[in-house]
Image (cartoon, rainbow, N blue to C red):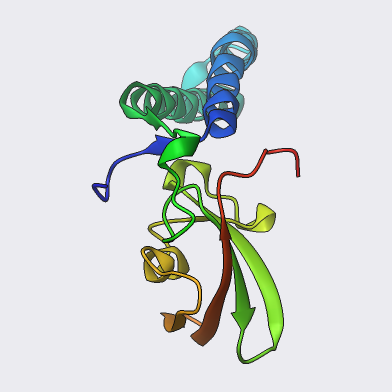
Length: 164
């Protein structure tokens, strides 16, 4: 897999498509209405509301372009492509933190689906990069900004159902 390739799970694809639709159909209209209202206040050269709305519009259009490009170039993950012998995108991995003696579980995803609070980490993150290609029984040390993490790979499974 190329480092810049975007591989999406079916759930991730749906989430990004839903976000894009919301931005195009709802947020665009909201911002356009704010711009119209701000124009009605008169001189737009000294109108903070107008300036804020235009900045928000620029940010929104940038996000829409980014999502459209991402979706155009994304490849849908096939559950059959997910190995349970080696860690890759789509693999859920159970690790033993050797310093804390705790078990943690992560699903390796593309950067577009990364959500650390939901234990979905990007294959491009320091931990994700270090885990790629590893198998059950491997012990690894990962340098992160907070220090060094030491993990043992306990278990690998395929794509989760997305119902967690």
